[in-house]
Image (cartoon, rainbow, N blue to C red; front, side, top):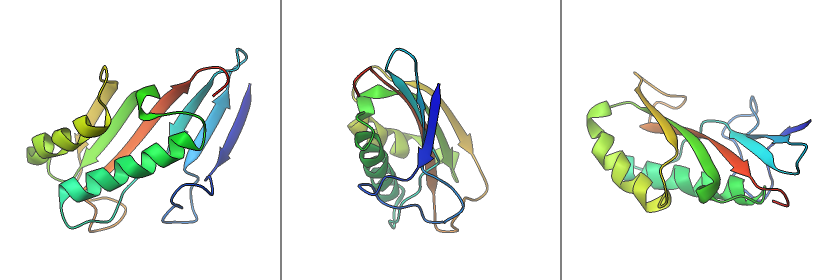
Amino acid sequence: MEITVGSPASAPQPLSPYYSQVARVQQADGGALLFLSGQIAEGATLAEQTRGVFETIDALLKAHGATLADVINIRTYLTDISRLDEYGAVRREFLTGTPPTSMTFEVPRLFRPEAQVEIEVVAAVAAGG
């Protein structure tokens, strides 16, 4: 098993130098698991931030030969759980197939004070991806 950790140059760069955005765990069969750090995005509204996060996640996955369809687990952190439906509507724009396993948490605050949502995912990449 080989593990590679980093932040692909082809995707938006991390907001802090203290973490890497992706850990890739190469499997013996040629496939891989991708573990993405929690992502936040700029925007005035929850919908804008959620779209920005999913666009970043999409770019990170593409840098590793994956797509949003390869996401097998998603963890979402919201600063206001009463807005879950608003978040969910945007999420369904990006995750259109069978929903991945999922956990959603309400938290009092995130890495940046203006952030309303943070999302981390795990994706499974088929051999050759």
